[in-house]
Amino acid sequence: MKRMPKTLRVVAASLATCLAAGLAPSHAQTVKVGFITTYSGPMATLGDSMEKGAKLYMKLNADKLPAGVKVDFITRDDGGPNPDKGKQLAQELIVRDRVQFLAGVVWTPSAIAIAPLVSEAKVPFVVMNAGGSVVTTMSPYIVRSSFTLWQSAYPMGQWAARKYKRAYIAVSDYAPGHDSEAAFERGFTAGGGEIVGKVRMPVGNPDFVPFMQRAKDAKPDIVFSFIPGGPQSTQIMKAFGDLGLAKAGIKFVGTGDIVSDEELPNMGDAPIGVVSAHHYSTAGDRPANKAFLAAWKKEYGAKSIPNFLSVASYDGMDMIYTAIREQAGKVDADRSMAIMREYRNANSPRGPISIDPETRDIVQNEYIRETRKVNGELANIEVDTIPSVKDYWKEFNGKK
Image (cartoon, rainbow, N blue to C red; front, side, top):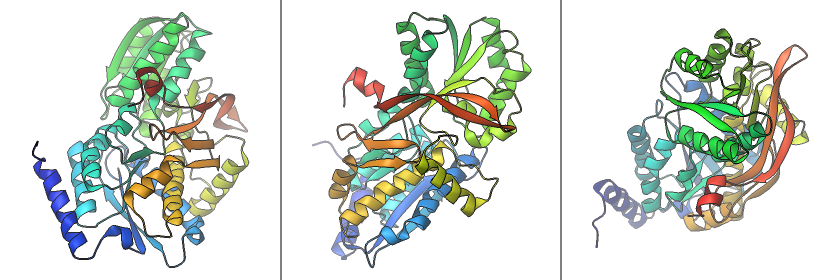
């Protein structure tokens, strides 16, 4: 029999000690949720958006927990895209803090690094960002409340092929960027479009100007892009605007990360006319979204703006609370996963959502949005809806 890696042996031994001491998580009335995200460094706004979404849900739904049950929400900062740090934090939360759920995680490489730990320890892991398609294949204890890049980039390619012939692709150089590149290219070329060039850009602190210049020099009809969102949305949009691509007749399209809602006020007029595919917009005209926005602004201030990470964390906490509620607070890992595999919510701020029980990925609407100025402010206006989108990568490559 193959010997278990040392890290996993430590986790397993520690859990066995907890069980022997009568500290089994499955019998606790205080349910511990370990939340790993990015609170520091240049992408710290992403973690702030995620935590605010999770905590808003908890405040609004405290009365939906079973009597006598409370949730202990334990936060940890991974400092940015650092898989080793993410893995270390997950191990500490599992072994020392004895959490019954892990949640959060911005970065796909970190989610992949954590996967063996949650498999061995049997701790459900609700991924609230980390959009690489492969993530849910890495452990049967992972369920995703966020998105995959194939869900947005493939229909973006299909849409673009109906209007344009030549495209240039510029994406961040890590798994979600690679997914978005492959997905857009497949959708665009299947519709008769031609890819005239590609570039992969550094994930950390990139200077987007030389990459946008290369795109301009290729003279495409459109530039398709994915970046991790946050401040990079503003940086890439300013590079696009300052280099005059729009004036040269080049359209900017992409996943929703290039026009992240909370960054729109920082972008000037450069995003006007940008078309994106995404599963959420603060401009979405849904009663559940209006209620969410009203609660958000009451809690965090009139000028605070949620984004797709906020909504994924909000919905992810609803998944966890559903599992807790259906077990009367005495949570068992396998039972929690069974409950979350069947999760449905007809009234998420982003529209109806559910979990595909075969893949443990989210199923949700994708919206084609155009960035417009409405009452003097930029907004991502939903102009078309693609309903009940699964992860196309798994649909094309087999559900693993």
